Structure formats: C-alpha cells, structure tokens
Amino acid sequence: MKIVVLGGDGYCGWATALYLSGRGQTVAIVDNLIRRQWDRDLGVETLTPIRTLAERVAVWNRSAANPIEVFEGDVTDYGFLSSMFREFRPEALVHFAEQRSAPYSMIDREHAVFTQSNNVLGTLNVLFAIKEFQPECHLVKLGTMGEYGTPNIDIEEGYIEIEHNGRKDTLPFPKQPGSFYHLTKVHDSHNISFACRIWGLRATDLNQGVVYGTVTDETARDEAFVNRFDYDEIFGTVLNRFCVQAAVGFPLTVYGKGGQTRGYLDIRDTVRCVELACLNPAAKGECRVYNQFTEQFSVLDLAHLVQAAGRKLGIEVAVQHLPDPRVEAEQHYYNAKHAKLADLGLQPHLLSESLLDSLMNIAVRYRDRIDQSLFLPRVNWRQPVNRRQPKEEMATAGAAK
Ligand SMILES: NC(=O)c1ccc[n+]([C@@H]2O[C@H](COP(=O)([O-])OP(=O)(O)OC[C@H]3O[C@@H](n4cnc5c(N)ncnc54)[C@H](O)[C@@H]3O)[C@@H](O)[C@H]2O)c1
Image (cartoon, rainbow, N blue to C red):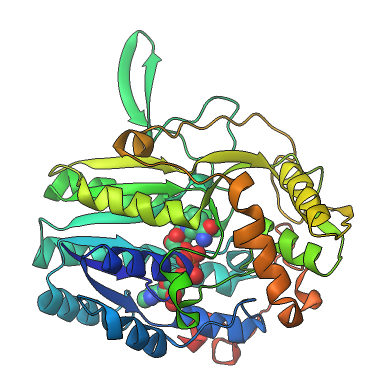
C-alpha cells in the first residue's frame, strides 16, 4: 500500500512512518519541519537528542526494502500538496501534521490564530486534494479525545443514539473542547464528515488519547532513529513530565486536585491503530470515528505510578499540587468507550508494563539534558498574554512561517 504520513517528522508520525515502512508499505513523509522551529522559538528541547529528518531517513533507507520518500513542505500550501499527490499517488493518507499543543494555542491571540489557521486550513486542503487527485484515497486523521471534554455521561465512539420528543436519530457525540487547539480538531471533524457526505470521500477520524513512551521496535534499532520525548510545559505531556521530574528528584507538579481523567496509550499502540485503520479502510462516503486509547488514568493516578516506579529505581519523589492554569474540571465522571480498534485486532501494551522501560529509564538515561526551568506552567487559560504588537514585530510561529 502507498501511504503518505503528514507530520512524519513529529513524535507520532516518525514512529508510524518507520513502523509502516518496516511492515512492507511504501511510505512517504510530508513535513515542513515547523515543530523544530516552534521548539527553538520557545526555547524548549526534546529530552532525547533527535537527528535531522534527512539524517534519520537516510540511515533507515540504507536497510529498508522500500525507501521512505520525503516531501518537505507545508500542508497549508495547496500547490505543494497537489504536486505531492500527483507524484506519490497515495492510497491512504495519515494526517498528523498539526499544531498539537493546547498550552501553545492558549499563549495569546497570535498563537490561537496561528493554531486554528494551520490546523483547520491544512485539513481543508487535504480534503480538497483527495477529492481532486485521488478520490479513493482513505484519509486517516488524528483527532483527540479532548474533542469530547468531560461530560457527565459515558463517551461513545463518535456518535450517539438520541431520543428526543418521541423521535430517534444517531448524531455526532456532543463536543466540549477545552482549548483553541482542541477546537481545531472539532472543526476538522466537521469538515471531514461534510466532505465524506458531499463528495463520497472515505475517512477514519481517530480520537486519540494522550500518547506516552518513546521506544518502538523500529526506533530501538539504531540511535539515529531515537524519537521525541517532550516534557516542557508547552509540548510535554503530563506523564513524560512526571518521569523527568522524578529522574531529578523534583516534586511532581499536579495541577489542582489531580482528578483530571483522560485516556492514554503507548506509542506502540498508536502505530498499530493507524495500521489497522489503513488496512481496513472506511467505505466510500463513510466517516468513521474510533476512540484511540487503551487505559484511563487521573493525573493523581499517574503521579502515584511514577512515585512507585521511582522507588524501584531508588528515587524518592514528592507530589506538589499547583493551582490549575487550565479551565477544566479537577474531579469528574469519565468513562469513554474504546472497543472498535480492539475489535479490529489491537492488543494493548499496558502502562504498568512500560513505565520503567519506555519512560523512567529514558528519563534517567538522559538526565543530564533535563532543563528544570521548563517544568512549571506559565501559560494561563484565564489570562492570555495581550501583546498588542504590530504584526511585523511578532516573533511568533505564525510570523516565522
Ligand atoms: N502526542 C499526543 O499525545 C497526541 C494525542 C492526541 C492526538 N495527537 C495528534 O496526533 C498528531 C501528531 O501529534 P505529535 O505528538 O506527533 O505532534 P508533533 O508536534 O510531534 O508532530 C507534528 C508534526 O507535524 C508537522 N506539521 C505541523 N504543521 C504542519 C504543516 N502545516 N505542514 C507540514 N507539516 C506540519 C510538524 O513539523 C511536526 O513534525 C497531532 O495532530 C495531534 O493533535 C497527539
């Protein structure tokens, strides 16, 4: 199968591109490398020393049956996207290429506007390109479980049957996103579903939980393939940050009460879920939604798991509760369905089995690269920075782009 991975230089995209290539698919990576630029702009760095895209792909291609092709460019540039489609002719398109940090989108007006234009317009271009050049191509789009928010009822997989005033219908599950970033995913979902309805495109919207872990069978093959491990307050996820904090004996920074519960999955399950979606494409005109996570944890659950893992390594770790910089429920009901990928054959890796090997050990191994000044939250949902600068002076990603 010819599969293009948009965002293939990123955390999920890199692991996915290698996995699919290793499983015999013909893979192309599309990326404009802007994530590396955002890191530089914000003064943050992945814990693991990742190589340039050119270097890591060159090393992979030395031993790959089908070399990975690279198209460097911006998904919001329709001319670029069109030429990629004409040249590569993908049968499946996996779309990871978005600005994916909630705090980044909440920094100020410029970052919110940039996030929304990058993500929403990029996906809109993808839909038009599929329609124009490859209408049979199956879109596998990464959404997020954060689209649903935390309703006081069970979360279904995309759709819910509703009875209202004596009539019944199956409708999209209500969305209550918690940041301008999460809102982009909701807008994307609507655009994708609309394009399937009017043009007969085929799409799978993967509402992914928080991904953890950095090691997959492929990335472990050579130091050149090492994947990202983000722990800073903007791009880092809570579990990564806790592991890195534990590695240097810094008290784990729990926001508020720590009852915020979400779905989580191992990076090895992300790549498998994407493969399962590609191998079992949606029908023409169908917009499927799968909830892509394997286990639920509250922030406090994670803190306690990391404390216990630290103890096994001889590290004592304290927990500190900080005022929650986000506007979110700190304690709530949460029960999200996640059966459809398991029905297709997903066999989950559990956090209890990988916390030491894929997280804590990595944090300890790269301890010298840890920058403790990146731990504490500075972005506040209630008080976005009001820059009021003239456009030409903005040193933001939007301006850099
Ligand atoms: N990492 C997670 O825990 C997680 C959880 C749920 C959903 N997701 C979704 O999965 C996707 C990938 O996440 P990630 O963690 O790998 O992010 P990432 O930031 O590591 O990777 C995203 C990649 O996309 C590229 N990109 C962004 N905008 C682009 C554009 N306009 N044109 C071309 N390339 C562009 C970036 O350069 C980067 O390499 C995102 O859409 C994210 O919302 C991730």
